[in-house]
Image (cartoon, rainbow, N blue to C red):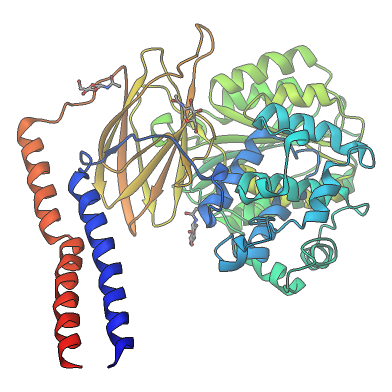
Length: 546
Ligand SMILES: *[C@@H]1O[C@H](CO)[C@@H](O)[C@H](O)[C@H]1NC(C)=O
Ligand SMILES: *[C@@H]1O[C@H](CO)[C@@H](O)[C@H](O)[C@H]1NC(C)=O
Ligand SMILES: *[C@@H]1O[C@H](CO)[C@@H](O)[C@H](O)[C@H]1NC(C)=O
């Protein structure tokens, strides 16, 4: 008589039962993993088609940062970060992956994508494509638009797209917003204002704790006005970090013929007096540029515990930003002391100003972990501020295996550590003194997160083997990021050589089993089965009544 509700109910019953039976079958086999230990398979959502969300975008940015493929274009990386937020809310918008449009999180239109492939018209893209092929195994010739559904592909091609534009990326945010609106995502109904808002949303740094020493070039060639611009640059960077004994400590030295100590890492415990002290630094106007001597000074003096650097066991990254306007007068020393600084765990970010600097020398100072910055004039220093801040945020503390790291973290704060994995592999053991943290470890990126990692750890221990193909002299480095999950947490991370994980005791195993059983009993899938039965009976009853 009334078939419609009957059909509807039958359909509902079918769907519910199908889902219920299916998930019950799956659920019956699922085992809760041992507590805290989730080595699992490596996760890399940057290569997973249609992955979404901020961790995925952040992981793409980490890969771009580590690979240095866009390093000759300082404004590009920060711009890409803002674009992802402005275009699709980091891919969270439903329509990001709509049918018929493959531009991905960065929404690269098909015509723009094809332009990036055209290295005849844009020969300056050729070296970048080569470096993308070398770092990521992504080859221009094989690329299709639909590949951009994978987040890393979308991010790289979006960057290349920006580089096909004849105009240079403007430094100011409103101008960038107009630039973005003008040249990207013609199909997107977003206004430049979306970009401006995005820029505000993605600023800031969640990494807490940094020992940062600025090395200012005080040689006569710089000039008084430019020396003032150097000090302004220092104070701009300082203002984006929270200064404090447990947070960021800042020191400053000046060098020319010799080294002048201006500010020790231990001198100031808050921002205002520090900024004032930087303002008060007097320009040496000295002869020569003894860069090697400056590197020797920071290695043997500035970054020592007596002078305010924190112990290795605190897991605080040590970074030095070194400004220079020319070549050193002591290149031999530069090579030697750059190496010593690295051995001490200091990362150097050389900033070469003017075209008189020697790129090779800057590369020597930076080494593999550091990063070279170049600007034409001191006036342009402000253009690298955002990229510098982001790079400082990604700085990692090198910790020897066997030294336990203890630190406090607020919610959302992060600590980046790195370890050289012995041939026998290594074991991480996490002890929580208070609150909760999540640890991600990776041999692939320097700042792993939920979207990219080889292992995760929230309590207990995990064994990390050395890279399967690591030869005698090429040891694996594992990067470990610790994220604070509760308002105040405090943790200790112990590391040992080899596999020293505690095997699960039989008692614990029993407990885990009983937990699994009780979880199964309370499983919502059981409730689904109940509803199936209910729907079946009701629909049968209904069919009689109607
Ligand atoms: C950084 O901190 C903000 C809040 O301070 C938080 O919303 C954001 O998720 C954090 N980012 C990460 C990667 O933890
Ligand atoms: C970590 O995972 C990546 C894949 O994301 C893999 O290439 C690499 O070999 C893994 N590292 C180790 C030490 O297993
Ligand atoms: C590490 O040791 C534990 C306990 O002895 C063992 O259960 C586990 O299989 C080992 N892991 C590896 C990868 O060898």
